[in-house]
Structure formats: C-alpha cells, structure tokens
Length: 592
Image 1: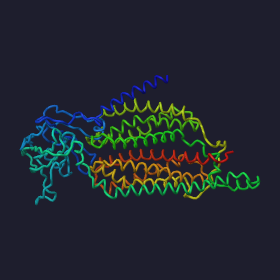
Image 2: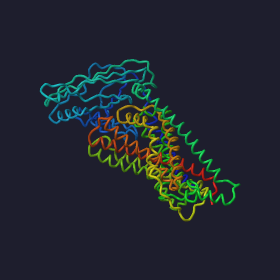
Image 3: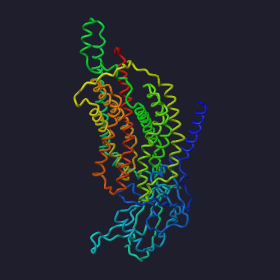
C-alpha cells in the first residue's frame, strides 16, 4: 500500500517537474535571435480603461481592422492566461533590420456604431498593449481635443503608429511606440491606418534589455531604504525587550517556584499566593477548541511561509518579473510542491493533541486555502464573464489548475499528513492535563483574548507598512516590482516581529490565568491582515483613480484573497512561535 502511494506521488512529481521546466515562466519559445529581413511578429494583446488595470478586453473588441482569417494566437503559459492576456498576430509586415517609411495596416470604414465605440473608449481613456519579441509597447486609442462647440472636447483617433526598434547584432533590445495622425471620428469617413518602422543599433546587451521598464527612482527611493532600516531597528528593539523582560521575569519565577530549602508551611503559603502563568500548568496543554480547523490553518500557514520564501528566492535568482505571468505560474507550481509541508505540520499537530479524525484533518488542510481562493475567484470570474473581459478565466485553464491541485497538491498533502502523524504525532507535553478545567477569573479589559488579538497585529503591520505601498503600487499602477531583495528582508522582519509580539501576548494571557492561548496566539498574529485590508481601503480611495463595479470588485476581491493568505501565514507563524515558548517555560517547573 505505502509503496504504491510513494510510486504514484513520485510519478506525479516527475510529471509536474517536466511541466515546470516546459513552462514559459522559465523557458522562452525561441532564442530571440533573428536573421536580416526575418519576419517579426507584432502581437496585439488588450485594451481597457487606464485607471482600471484589471478591466481589460480583447484588442479587437474595438472595431479596429481585423487580420485575415484565423490569425495566430500565442499562449504564454498558465500565469499569462490568469493575468488576462490574449496575444493575437496583427499580421503587420515587420522584418528584422528593414525600415518602413509608411506602411498600410488597413482602411477603416467608420459607421455610427464604430464611431460610438471609439468615442466611448477615448472618453474613458482607453490604452492598448502590444508585444514585439516579448517586449511590451503601450499607447492610447485616441485623444480629446478642445472643441469650441462642445464642453467635453472632440474625440480624435490616432491613425499612425511609429515603432522604433533598437537591436544589438541579431537580437532585439528595445521597442518604443509613438502615435500621430489624429483624425476626427465621423460616420461615413474612411481612415487610412498606417505604421512606420525604424531600426537603430545599440550597445545595450540582451541581458539588460528589460532595465528600461524598471522604475529605479521610485523603488530605490531613500524612503524605501529608510523603511527597511526602521523595521530592522524595530526587530532589534523588540527581540531585546522580549529577551530582557520575559526572560528576567521567568527566571525570577523559576527561582521562586522551585525553591527547595523552605519549610513545607512557607512553601504552601507561597504557592497559595502564587498567581499567573504557573497556576494554569494543568490546563495550558488542553487541546484547543475546533482542533481540526486550527491544525489545518497552522499547516496551511507553514506551507505559505515556505512558499513565499521560495518564490522570493526564485524571483531574486531568476528575474521572474521579465516574463508575462511568470510569478503566477511559479506561485501555483511551488504551492503544489510545498503541500507536503502543510500536511506534515497539520498531521503532526492534530495527532499530538489527541485528534482521531485525521482524514477530516487531511482533507481540510489540503482544500481550505485553495477552495477559499476558488470561491472568491468564482465570484470575480462571473463578473468578468458578464463584462466580457479578458480577466475571465477560460474553462480549460480552470481544469489545468484543478488537475495540478488534485494530482500533485492533494497527494502530497496526504503523504505529509501520514508522515506527520507517524514521525511527530506522539504527545510530548511537559505537564499533564487535569481532568477538570480550571475556571478562568475575570480580568481587566486589556487582558481579554479579543483585545490581545487585535493589538497583536499593530507592530507586524508597522514593519511592512511602507513595503505594502510599493507592492500595491506595482500591482495596481503599472509598475514592475523587481526589488525582491527588499521583499526578502521585510518578510524575514515580519516573521521575527510576529513571533516576538505573539509571545508577549501569550505571556500576558497566561499571566491573566487564561489558558486558551492557542487560538489567541493565532488571531493575534493573523490580525496583521486586518490592518493591511484597512490600509487597502485607504489606498483605493486616496491613491488610485479606479472606478466602476468591475474594478472595485476585482480590487477588493484580490486584496481579500491576499489578506486571507497573509493572515493564515502570520497566524501560523505566531502560533508555532508561541507553542515553542509555552513548552519552554513549562518544561522547567514542577507539574503535579
């Protein structure tokens, strides 16, 4: 039985390994080298309102001249489809190193319907995206010119596209698009759509050709460096504070609690006067409520922590920001391969706390986060289909994602659960759990689990606050995020701050003689995501010009998905850190 399971998992892993390396996220379909006058394809991609990044449509949803029958489509991989890209061959005649003074694309015959579509697009500030040799070009559909007879201005369509291509030997290095030839939109008019191509040699190497798209002044601004330094100082202060205050307090408690030279009467009097974390030693290792759910979220959070670290390292080494959808493809595949971790952590934790229904725990661990994302994605996909947007995920892509989950992620989670139960599932609590639960005394409001939970996320959020601004701006404002070294430092700082803050919160809770620390430690760390979501609301209304039901739904839907993952990740880190702390402090006291 076990050999067949390992064989199945091994074959599936091999299959996924092959898919991984055949994915366009890691390998180009060509070597990007061309011979003189070799045809170059100009791919048209999408159009949409500039202020609404996710509201994109097929380029030919506007009444541009369509290419011939059955134009070629370029599929760039799973991440590209999920990113809302659909590349279609424009069939514009471009040849390597061959200049074109003025070539004809087509003649555009305008009627009332076409004029209305173009005017609506121009009024909504529609932009478009092309690709040449995997390098993007952007432009606007048209412009609003002042008109004495109209308060809104007069819409004009740009009819000429001037493309400048820089090359180094046999490789394309840079492309640039400018437009002119503005023509008024009038029904019954025939417009000549034209283009020109100019080739210019350059000394820039192929490896540096993407640098022109990176906004160095924005991402490497002094405030970015200062924020990382500030967060680093917070880590030093917080870890020092935890070490100095808690360890000193605990050492004094140990010395007082473990005295051997006092007479029995004095010892009994001191013990009767004791209060705080020592009095709950018979309940502190009592299994938490809804153990199966806590095990699932802790296992999933441990997987997400490893996943984020792995993707950041791959992005640093492999410059994944260069490829369309490369980050998304990498994230999905790495999530599938790291599912063993979620099963191992969840299975071991569930078994150590006396859980019996391990199959339920395994299924919940393997499906909790993917199905939450699927639920949000289903709603957003329905909206995108209703609008006819490229953001709608095709059925075939859904099948591919489901197959990856069903045949890679789920079996690895199953294997991890079995291994976790057998290797790390034995109970090893320092103190025996008493039969009758100890009553929890009333304490001041600031020592209640709800207050401790909400306050716990403030410092972790403060450590990533500035980085959130850069991440949000790159995702929602057309900037390429490339400073993954910054992200790695901030992520490590977040982990350390989260552990320290959660330990402090757990210690305060135990001193209040409240032994329900498991869920409190999880929510104390997970509340970081609540503050991130509140910040996203501020960012939406203050920092962006997004509008409309479509974009608002996608903004808050994607942000909710991100915050759910962040909350589970931080919560798991906080729980695991608190668990080590609790076991450490109760290991050295006398447990009756």
